[in-house]
Amino acid sequence: MNEKTADSVDEAIEQVADHAEEGLEEVKESLAKAQRSMESAKAAIQGAAGKARETGAVAAEKARASLDEARKALGEAREKMGGMAVKTREQAEVLYAKSRDQYEVLAERARDLYGRVRDRVSEVDFKEKGDQVLEYIRHNPGKSVLIALAAGFLVGYIARPRD
Image 1 (tube, rainbow, N blue to C red):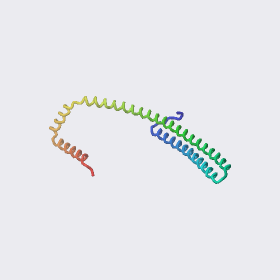
Image 2: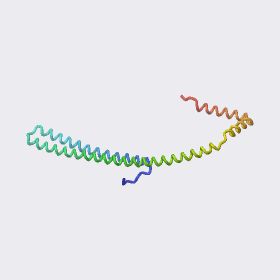
Image 3: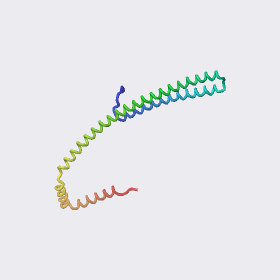
Image 4: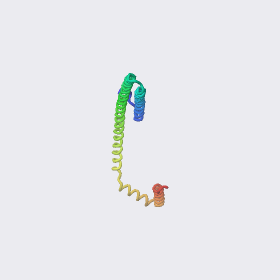
């Protein structure tokens, strides 16, 4: 791949789309050229139908030449489609490699974060925290009831069905 690789996945996708669009235009032109050649051959054959045998031979030769030209145009279209497929595959491989690298970085970060959270959770003594909550409730019963009421209202509001 001689072209500069894209800096982001979005840019690489744009490049693939541009290459595909350019390739399709070239294929379209080749197919149009083949169509014109086929129409020319058809016209030559139809024109020869009403003429004498000698004219028919000339028309057949013109038709053969037009068909050869059409065959060449179809060959060009096939080659351009093959080139377009190669470019698309190369860019897809680059996109895959970048995505894989990004995934590996994110997976490593997630493993690190999970390890830190697990360590912090393992340090927490839930029995002690439960005792602290009960002690707070005993010392502040009014505040505790209001907090419980507000929390219940909030959970009920969030969990209620919406129309």
